Amino acid sequence: QSNSINVGFLRLFRAARLIKLLRQGYTIRILLWTFVQSFKALPYVCLLIAMLFFIYAIIGMQGLLSFKSS
Image (cartoon, rainbow, N blue to C red):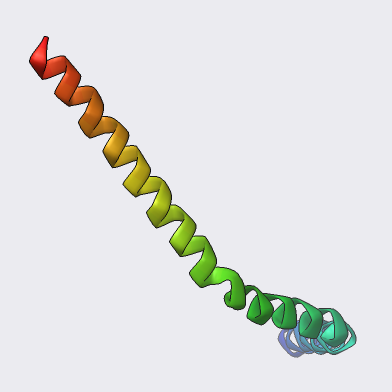
């Protein structure tokens, strides 16, 4: 009998957690919408990172060239 009370008690927590998730549905939708909208800026961020790598490579090559000629 005590075992069935423990299982019922755990099921009560599971139901409470489900109700809590359903109440937070609005905030979860806002977070998902924001996450999807951030994908629009992803190509620009990748392009910026690629440009920084390219500039860093040019500066590194110029630095090694001056170091080698000395």
